[in-house]
Length: 358
Ligand SMILES: [Zn+2]
Image (cartoon, rainbow, N blue to C red):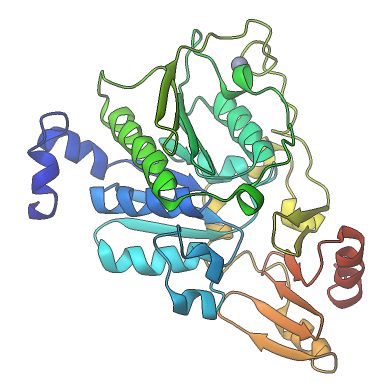
């Protein structure tokens, strides 16, 4: 246990706490700036099992703040989940890492979180947070919300329990505020702080510390403002009040999403979001089918053959890429694709239908 000696020496953790941490299972959703910092901290701290979930691949503009990745990852456009697991495996080979290259949606959320003790939110997307909130409420799991934009960060522990507010009590709608990390920017120093606080709370929750924070923490590190707010439960909240879920348990159809500031569009066909009934989506080992190699719902062999005549085809470890000049198609094993060279969802959909056609 020499590896964790400095953590065990800390009064709040000790050898008992470390033992609990080594027996803990955590799912980190999103492996951008917040997620790569959290995955790094939780792996080094000795979390026994980490499920690392992300749908995207590494790009050069990520490296300023997404601490796990290298220039080689960006050059090869390695899926973030795979790159993260590769690097973390060399940092701590004594824990279990499960990379999941997938879009998180109502069809797979249950399988992704039902066998873990805690979920760390590292997404940049309110809709996915609302889904995580509903799923965690339904399954009685604690999760830790974290958000970061420009120099402004926020985090709160969303804990199961009748008197506790849920995320929906605070943020009850998908409000597009117009500002994103691509337009307003984001400081790597900020995302490290948010992730560090999230992980500190994660460790407290996992080892049963009485010092778990019950407030919403918000801060602006450029303007030196730090606030801690009490959040009351909303008695009319549909999620924690009435268990009425808007996303969880709903069938997830085909979706087309323009990716923020990327000149890219993600297409998620219905097959990649199948099994919308959470009761049907569970079952032992289900999450494993979303593992690093992806759920092989698509025959890369057959599609690669078809693509040969259309442009430059590259079969990578996790994706099949087609370069057709102005546009690129990166196809994942679950049928999902990221179309680059356009932010027009209609155009991207047409390209998907023409070249992938699922
Ligand atoms: Zn609520």
